[in-house]
Structures are given as structure tokens and as C-alpha cells.
Length: 315
View (cartoon, one colour):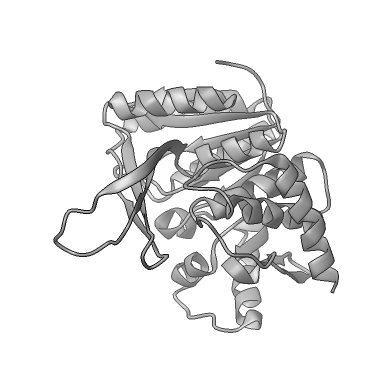
């Protein structure tokens, strides 16, 4: 499938997300699972599916290899997202989530993914450049697979600068530490921010100062720090704002960060003010918490939580 989109996502470490329930997770014994579901996954793929659910025209550039990759392509196609797969020799990884019904806990098992050759990496960048040329916003999200250098996302930022696209980046580890310029909005979790700067960042002022340090370095113009149940911090060069979460009990936390990024990207595509876009992202994350596995939410739920979140922030 081909076409143009307001938002283009990039996923270097695509996954087939498998989710299942178990009565009781214990060591050594066979754990009998049921109610399994399969979703196309990896950060950018999730963002694309969620942005599409919000009504945005979106294309997804993602790696796909082997029978698992073929299934991911089919799953992305079934969602209505414009898929732009980059075929690779290695097999696409699986990620496995088990919901332990006895304890209410969720166990997540994530594989590293296939090694990407230099040629495969180059083809990913070529596909991104072609797709981003007609897009206003690029979202690069997720971990870097084996074989991909830690400065890869800086090359993505350079492409976005060349074609005039706004880059939203959500990554961790070396992929985060090696970005030096060209990112419009950076979305680390509080854990990822702590790891990036190697500091505990216990207090909100410390967290704001850390986010602004990334801005002062030139890594990004805006930093949004996701805080889980505590909402998010929106930090710009001159200001900061704490945005509250919507209080609720979650069904699954998998993909909530991707939903936040999707909501923010859709808000930016609609040319909303930053604060409103981040609130929309929080509403999308709240709706995602109510769906199993990495299943997409209903747009009406996001709109309802958007109103609730705004009211909660003003209270």
C-alpha cells in the first residue's frame, strides 16, 4: 500500500506482540495460557495504529523479516494504516506478555530482535526519506536492534531536517544519548531520562532541570517526560508544566507510552498548542490502559478522557 500521510512513523525493531492470560504464574511448572491475541508491535508501529485510530492519515515504515514479519505486515494492513515494510533477512522478533490472574500482575518478555546489516539500515533511511518528503511529522519510536549504531536516530533527525519534517523521538539507551540536534519533541519516560543522565532525579525540579539540560544541549526543542500514573512534564526552553493523568485502574499498561506519543503527534499535526497536544496524548494513553495487550482504543474514549483530563488539570 502506498500514499501520503500527515504523520510517518519509523520502527527499526518491529515485533509481533503476543498477549495471553494465565491463572497463576509460578516457576518450573508449565503455565497454561489462554485468550491469546496477536498485534503488530514495536514503538512506531503502535504509534501509527493509534494515530490512525484517532483519525490521522499515517504511514508506517518498519522492518519485517521471515514468517513473523509477514504476519506483522498483514496485521498492519488490516488496521488500515498505510504500510511501508522494509524487508530484512532476519526474522522479526516476538514480544510476549502474560497477565497473571492470580496476582493481577503483568509479565513482559521482550527479545532483542534480528541483526540489521548496513544495507538494510540504509534501505530503512531511504524509505523514510521518501515517505517523510510529503509528511509534516515523523515519529521515530522504539529500541534499536542489534547491528544498528547508537547514533542512528541522529541520522533520522538529519533526514527530517533536510526534508522539513518535524521529528518526534521516543527511544532509550544509546539511541537517546547520541542524539545531538534536529529533534522537535523528545519523549523519554522518567526511567529513560534517569538512565540518560545517570542521575536519580527524585524531585520534580530535578526532573525539569534534567529535561532542560537536553534542550540546552540542542538535542530537542521540547521535552515531554512521561511519568506513568503521575501524568507528564512538558518542558520548553522558557517554561514547564505538570500535566495530570486521568485516575483509573488499568487493564494493560503495554503501549500506553506509544499512545501518548500518538496523541501528541496528532495534536501537533492539527497545529494545536503544545499543552493541548500533550493533554490529548495523556487522554490517548488513558484510553489505551483500558484495552488488552497492545490493542488500539476507541476514538470516542480518547475524546471523553480528553475532557476529563482537562477538568482534572483545572481542579
